[in-house]
Image (cartoon, rainbow, N blue to C red; front, side, top):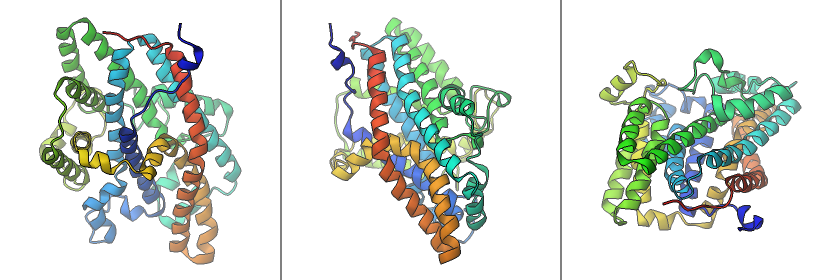
Length: 402
């Protein structure tokens, strides 16, 4: 019998994969800062002869290309969950463990957002900051109803199962809330994570029963989900299987080629989408999202991810203490930055802009958001660790499966 202390230990994590997740998290954070306080760098003004237009259509856009960052999240989940689900094949327990892993941070992030929103509700800083920056992001988003019922609905149901009208490929819009009513808008990715986990468990179940059934199920899943985020879980799953089955070797030149090609596809996805990929987006298919530019970015993210996994030099480079810290706190940063940006960052803009001018006020809001996010994330990380321990407890003793 395994002692309870062993069951409650958090799983061993890969530092390098955590660093990749941390860098992807930074892309999301920087995108939201741009959308909130410097919207000319993040809107559709990409064909103008402006600084924002030039940056948006250059490799510099990768610094705040949050869409690519999210796609890397999903690839990482498919890659990491595949061996976990395969070695310890207990579908019911695995789903319960995944639910516990995501629910606790989601609820606490929503609770943090409720508290911040309640403190500044009379000031309404997002609308006032939006008037200064011209941000549609601040003007329209972070409009939750401040009730306990809505808090529970948003964190338990929307974040983990339903998603939102703008992000769900599984449910009709009339059954979903708009993402602008969410306490923490980035939580839409957690519903995708939960659905992706179920998809991976189904594929692994078929693989254990029959390679033929697995092949048929894999082909069907690819056809159904080719225009959704779930395809990234499948690709991450296949990359992991390929890594397990092939002789492990590092080919630096090939990895660099994958990285450069992937980066190019990502930063040109919005400005110069490939014609045949746009036709895929326009085709009438089930379970699809508005994917203009996204399929190109997803392909780019896949190539970048594969290149990062197979470049030993980059692995050595991304092992510094600061990057390790970023990787460790990445999920916490991802969850807390949105209410901090909307509540604290926008409030700083409202008070600083009249005193020092709008440009300095907006810069102060961005810096305040970064400072508060990185200050709070280590404390929120304790909640993340608790979620990992609860997840391990719900999973139970590890039972290796052949």
